Image (cartoon, helix red, strand yellow):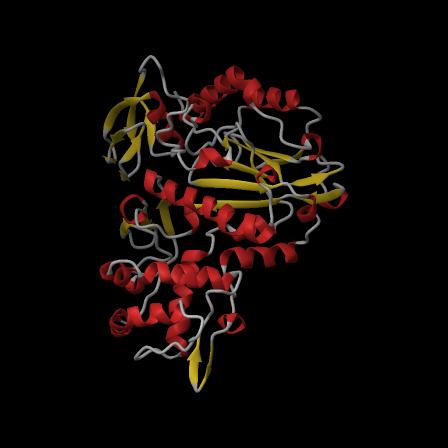
Amino acid sequence: MNNEIFLRNLFQAYYQESQKEIPAVSMFDRREFGFLLWDNKFMQRHLGFAKIEDLRKYLINKSPMHAYSSGSLYSQPDNDNMENKGYQGCDFVIDIDVDHFYTECKNDHDLWSCKECGTSGSGMIEKCPNCEKLKITRVAWICENCLNIAKKEIIKLIDNFLIPDFAVNLDQINIAFSGHRGYHLKIEDPRIRTLTSDQRREIVDYLTGHNISFEILGLHEKASIFGLLKDNQGWSNKIMTKLEEILRMEPLEIEHFLRDPNWGDLNPARISSLLRYREEFLEVINSKQQNIWSIEGFGLTTWKKLLGAVVKKVGAEIDEPVSIDIHRLIRYPGTLHGKTGFKVQELEYDQLDEFNPLDEKNELIDPIVFESKKKITQKLEITDVKVPATKIKGMTYGDYKWGEKIEVPHHVAVFLLCKGVAKII
C-alpha cells in the first residue's frame, strides 16, 4: 500500500474516533484555518468554520497532514483577500522549536548531505564544510534531550519573562506540544491583541536579548571599566544572576561553556585569566560598594563578548518571525502532526515540568496516539541512507541503514513513515 494512503486512512480513523476530543479554541468563528493535504504541496487556507462540529467533519472527511488556525481574529476569516478579512487583532504567538537553535544532541541525531559534492555528516551546519555550497539535504530528528531543552525554554520564558516582566496571567497563556520538535505558546490578552508587528518586534527583542545595549545597562569605560549592577531590575539583574551562576560552576564546565563557539568562543588565555580571578570577581559583582571590573587581559571588547554569551543563556530561543507576523497560522490543538503522527497536545502550566512527549505516562496528555494495545507490529523497508536511533516509549529503535527490512511496533512505524524514511512492505 502507498505510504500516503496508509497514513491518511490512519489519520481519518483517529479523527473519526476522537472527534469529540478536538477542542474549540477561543473566538472559534473568528479564526482563519489552513490545511495541508496529503496529495497537495500547497496549503489550503482562508477557511472559516461557524462551529466546532464543522471543523470536526472537515478533519474526518479530508484527514489533513497538517491543520492550523490563526492567532488573528477576523470578521470574515474565510475571505481570501487579507485586506477584506476585517482584521480585529492578534494573540501573541510564540514558537519554540529546536530546529532553530543549537543543541549538542544534534551532533548525534541530525544528519545532512551535500547535493553538490555528496559529502555527508551529522550535526547542525549552514553550508557544506567540503565545497562550501548551501545545497544541503537535512534529516532533523528528535530525542528526549532536545525536547526537554525546548520544554525548559518554554518554562524559562513564562517564569523569567512573561509573568515577572509583562504581568501576564497564567490563565491567559495557552501551551501546546507541537507534535514534533517543540512547543507553542499563545497569549490571549486584549492589551496585546492591538499591537502592531513593529511593537511585537520590540517584545521579541526583549525576550531574546537581541540588539541589547550593554552601555545602556551600565557597562562603560572611564579610566576604569564599570560593569552592570546585579541590584538593577530587568536584563541587568538577569545577566548578573546568570553570570554568577556560571562562575560558581566547576572550572571545567566554565571552560567548556566559554570555549564553545556556539556560546562564549573566548580566547583560552582570557578564560584562564577569568578562572584565576573569579573569586575576586564574584566579590565585586556582589558588592554594593565596588563596581569596577578588572581582570587581566579583559578590555571592553572581551567583557562584551563574555556578556553576550551570558545573554544567549538568559534569552529565550524563539522563532522570531512567528511572533512578529500578525497573520501567521499555528497548529490546531488535538490535530495530528504529519511529520510524526503525534498529536498537538495542549498542556496546563503545572503539567509541563513532568511532561515527556516520547514517553508520557499520563494517558490523558500522551501525544503518541497510535500505540497499539494489542502490540500490533508493521514491516517496513528503510528508504533513507541512514536513520538515527529513536527512543520511544522507553525502547530504542535503530539506527537503520538504506534497504534494511525491519518490523517495529505500530506507533514507531507511523513515526518512521511520517518522517519519510521508510516504506511499507
